[in-house]
Image 1 (tube, rainbow, N blue to C red):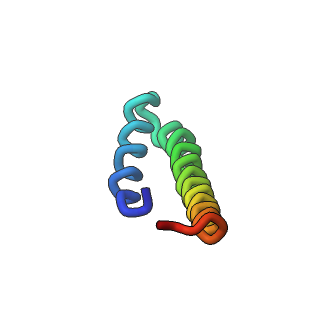
Image 2: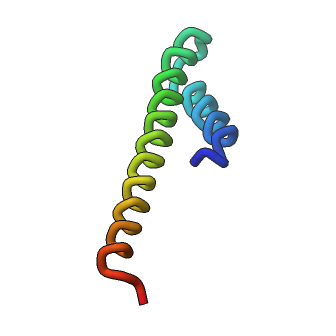
Length: 66
């Protein structure tokens, strides 16, 4: 998700301009929450992924790999 951030921002901005009336303020008021939700999802997915890696390492240390 971090690697395609520029593309995601572009798609979110285009989506915000398509779904709102042709007013610049409306576009911004829709785009900002979309971008914030994207950044929150990037943060949460990284956090969960790091936790999963840590759990996998702990399992390997406890039960030993082959």
